[in-house]
Image 1 (cartoon, rainbow, N blue to C red):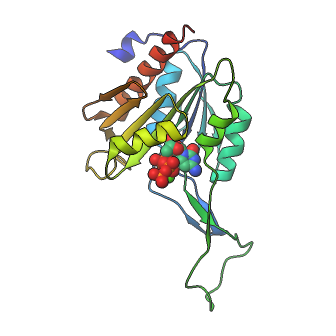
Image 2: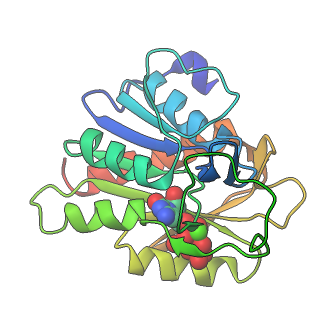
Length: 229
Ligand code: CTP
Ligand code: CA
């Protein structure tokens, strides 16, 4: 029904969405990554487009077709995602961070494929930049701070951890989900999420990621309205 009625309630807004996994290469043919398919972020991008927003989708490697009418920017690593975000989201009204960004990367990336050799038993890792946190700090203090939406993939204490992320990254909304659950999280088409805002917690039932996307955007629209924008 939503699709048919298709209210253009996000017209005039620029929404930047990050989606998919990042890959942190050890050498040209090996990397650290995670099983994110990008589906949740792509669903948000598509729904935002349908609802009239200008959408930029910053995406890690996925098998999904590019959503129509959306500007697609492909990235591979967390570092590249950070640069893309700072380049494309500077004038965004809304920033939705659905990407499953790798938290660590190999401290050294080899130019040539590594050969079997002594010393291969361990790899030294370093922390990747936190794209969402960096962006949040970048827009701190602005008169019209963009609405910042983060995700929290947890296997325990879902709400508690979501609250921590909300505060630590100064977000307006955290979409938390239990990735330990069978029908929710990585590689599924459905999600059971909890929408955690500073003053309100909303538990949504198990639903298609496309419906979760619209629920998130409903909250974004409400936040905009509450700001009088
Ligand atoms: N995120 C990000 N850059 C990172 C790590 C996370 O932009 N390097 C974003 C994710 O896109 C998500 C939010 O931050 O919107 C939370 O990601 P999550 O992995 O759940 O939390 P972390 O802050 O990385 O903490 P941890 O993995 O230790 O739970
Ligand atoms: Ca993480």
